[in-house]
Length: 88
Image 1: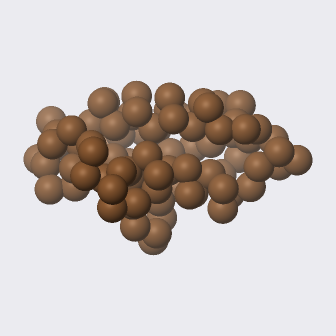
Image 2: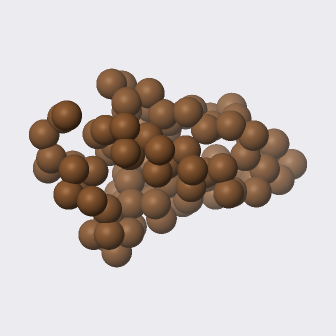
């Protein structure tokens, strides 16, 4: 199990991240706690690694720990999911 501090702000972010990580090889479960912005991923270490999962979070358009989101993916996010949006 690994946890990442993300830039997610709402339930749409939660759905997007959890769905995206469900398609990653070796991931058994992904759960985002919206208030704390912490994404918990349960995975098989024989099939993937925290680095690969961190990159998957970035490619979805969100920051993962101290690593900034992929700029192109971030631009594709709905306005409500961007870091500058107020919490809703």
